[in-house]
Image (cartoon, rainbow, N blue to C red; front, side):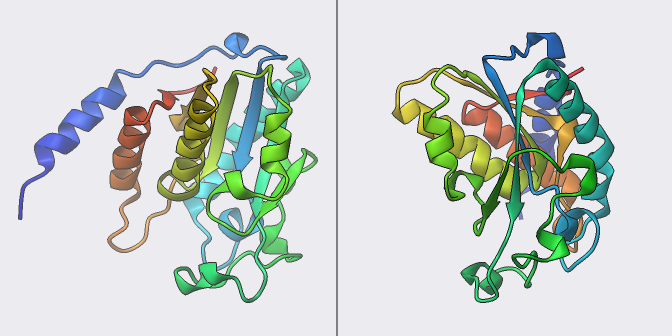
Length: 211
């Protein structure tokens, strides 16, 4: 089997060159912040619980609080599945609608919320209608989990949706506020590297942190 160590090293070096962004660069009228799947079923308990997700809560909560103080819109998304969700063919049952698992963690509750029955938040009912009404916004910050599934799909889909409409936008993903899970052959560090790199290749703006 081919040795990919040099490629992994090259990706790591590419990511090491990323810079942090000052929160002062986020304009109230121009920016929206998205928080994806920081919910009980991923951050507190359940079949898809990950301690890595739980560790993100303070960082994202602090950032969201600062954005709220500045008047920046903060939007949350939550997995909320019916019991016969087709997604359960690929994942164990999780985050059933109306359950504690589908509720946003208390540290991040109170923001506008879209429920989703898909790994890609762009398909959450009503979201594209909301997005279509935000013609003045050009910066969109994506935070939450999981880097290689929901975050990747959402960030790239947002970029593609705006490209299709010929709108120049900045889809920002701060590495300090996204993560994935560690399980078996699914190495969190490896999958973070690969999918962060792919986001860069797809025009997503990765930053180390937003300070």
